[in-house]
Length: 143
Image (tube, rainbow, N blue to C red; front, side, top):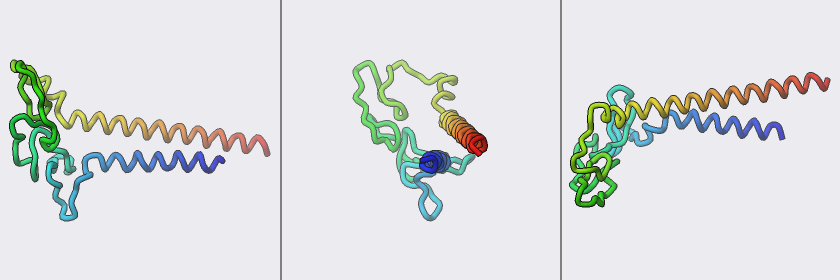
């Protein structure tokens, strides 16, 4: 029974570790280029999804009334709204202020994802170590 618990925790650790690298490199072709609707980030060298554009290296802007990753979402805006190619329907007088641009920046989102994964891995390892330590102590006391 105890070995089963360790296998379960070990599998979760492997999954977390694999997820860190595959979140943004999930569409890398054999020749090293990114798939359609993805682009190669200069800093991280990872393939990241096109947002507000589509095609190889995100070379085309979304057609009118479409938005999001690869322009796959359709806008259904009301009369007082317009379709933003990145986020969908927004008020006609909406403009992204410099502070708001930073919020939607992919690097901020990437950092948050990586911090959450790293903290999750750290907590998992800490809990696993604590469980193993107490199992070891319990075994020594019984002897």
